[in-house]
Image (cartoon, rainbow, N blue to C red; front, side, top):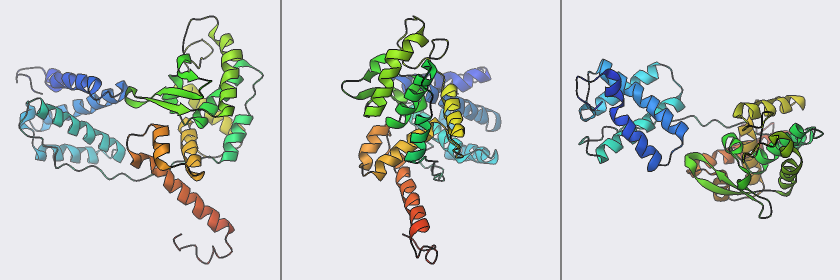
Length: 316
């Protein structure tokens, strides 16, 4: 978008984006997936400016142009979360070009974020989680692995991408913690519970050597081909285990992470500790679990208090 006007359209759209990608990787330390999403968003943005606003240079972009682009996104009936991500990409990009001296103004400074609806995620009860874990058949190596996967997802509250990326060197049995590489390649230390350690030790000592087939790999959780387990495989495992136990909730691997956080808060763990435990940069992300806890409290009240039916519209 900053190259000469006789440049090809693709070159116009991508010229400074490549420099921006380098900045996101080396200075902001964002994940490759996030950077890829930002670049796709910026490609659409660049094409919009070129096609509809006849703009070739970033310095020509005004707040009016941005508002037109955001309006075009809303007309596409995109999810609010998708629009918000695109706005975040634009804000970051325009700040970058301003800092680099490629523009004298930042047209995004008055652009407001999309107000997202707070969706309370599905959560399992402690009994449901225990039922799922206990139902795993550990007579075969795959079953031993699957039980360890559920224990780690719930016990340490890992994201599925963090789980599949675990290596043997990340597991510290004696010290009872896992070193996790989270979003933006940031490392955090996550404690392990005793049952989690027992399952992991059983997997590493008795099942993993069989699954590895003497292949020299440091990946912790392996599939039948002795390769890194895919996120889709973990998703399938969770869904099938839930159905097997007649759990009708719509769940995924992330549900175990939600359940872990909720159960920690219900047992009195401080919100800041849970934030660090989960690797959330912003505590507002963690606060969603306090809403889950309040919802559960209201449900218990409604089902057990003798005056609940008369006062069901009252706030607790």
